[in-house]
Length: 90
Image (cartoon, rainbow, N blue to C red; front, top):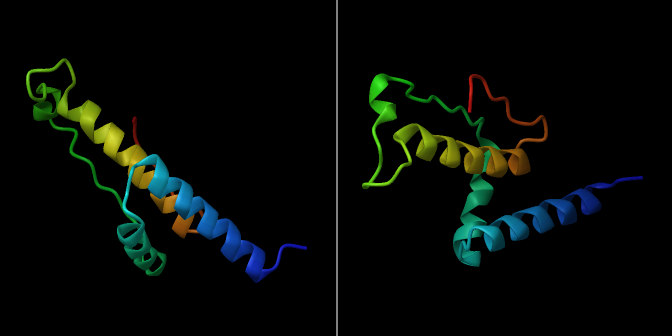
């Protein structure tokens, strides 16, 4: 049986993995816990300007946005037990 203590350990492990993966300082990672109290909604710009390249690279603003949204979703599923929905093409 999966109890509250086990759920908290799993949560802590997932948060620790996330902070290591993205090289987030432990202290700053602890600040992410406030997200438990929020519903995360992502609104993305898909206007023509998103085709503009970034800093002289081949990557577009849309490519950069997709990368950030994936990270936000990865963080969001740690804090929202019902999961995070994504709408549109990413």
